Length: 76
Image: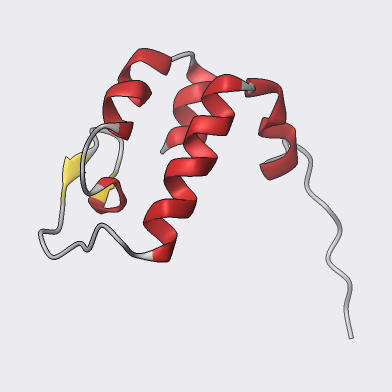
């Protein structure tokens, strides 16, 4: 959600999303709440928060996570 938002220039909405206690339970184009049993201290919640903050501060780092080019798949 955050990578797509930064690419679209929706940084204000993303800053608001960082303040939400359970960000991992938002999904889809509209960012609807789809779950209620999140735990704030989960590892992926912290990792997502740190990654989102870093991408908001340095949007040029999006290239580290995503690419518009498809890489060839090696066969066995």
